[in-house]
Amino acid sequence: MARSGKRKNRGRKKKIRKLLYFLVSLGVIGLLAFILVRTKPVEKKVVQPMPPPPPPAAKLPEEGKREKEPPPPPAPRLALIIDDGGYSVDKLKGLMGLGKPMTFAILPNVPHSRDAALLAHREGAQIMLHLPMEPQESERYSLEKDTVLTRMDKTEIQAILHQGLTQIPHVRGVNNHMGSRATEDLRLMKAVMEVLKKEGLYYVDSHTSIHSMGPQAARQAGVAFASNDRFIDPEKDLEAIKKAIRLAVRKARQEGKAVAIGHPHPLTARAIREMIAEIEGAGVKMVFVSEVVG
Image 1: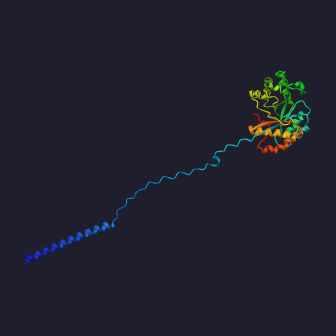
Image 2 (image 1 turned 180 degrees about the vertical axis):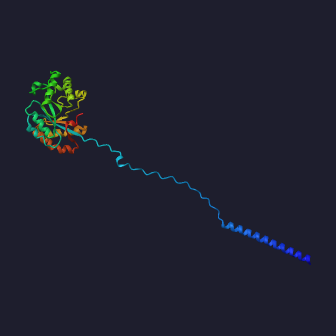
Image 3 (image 1 turned 45 degrees about the vertical axis):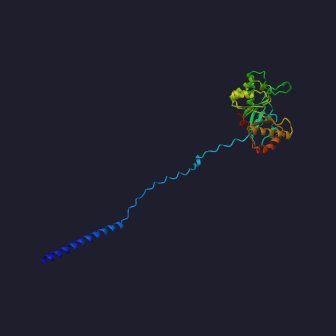
């Protein structure tokens, strides 16, 4: 009975032990399952590369650093010269007060040489010495006192030129009165240019000869010069003078500049006065001779 009881106790303990093992195992399995369900896998964060920055916006140039547009081309220029000043102050007065640049070429050794130059200068005009020079067929003309002749030597030529310059105040340049023979003489013109270069004066060739050596002598001496493109009043007729001025305007528009010569005559004064609006309407600027020499 005692052994039978021990065996039963031993069998009961074994069953209890197995039950405990089972329960412990079941608990461990349940705990593991619980842990697996509750625990989520950690997602790996993928670091995306930063997108490139946008290109910088184009900067507007600063106001002061903007590229300057090229200046517009200069307006065509027309220089009007009134020759033979000095015989009458009254005739010159009709050509003053135009409100536009005018240039007066004053003769030396005539009754009102100095007064005419002073009056024109006070009115804002530019002054030239109108130097008398030998024409072709000189025997046909009544020559001015101290006309420069081709038979003169250099000393005589330059003495006459200096004397004329002392008589006419405010002189800026020189052009020839007559001179169709004298201007063809290169030796004579070189003597003239030597003085003009020294005095800082310009030269305008009146173009009384198509064979004038004046421009060549001026260029060689380094004297600023221009040539007359047209006499505007060989005919004393209002419409003819206006037509000649229109041709000078056309020349200025074609070549950028032009020189035209008139004389102190009432019709010339009237024609110029009435043509100012038309000249400027054509885009041509009236200027002093000093603004077209070069």
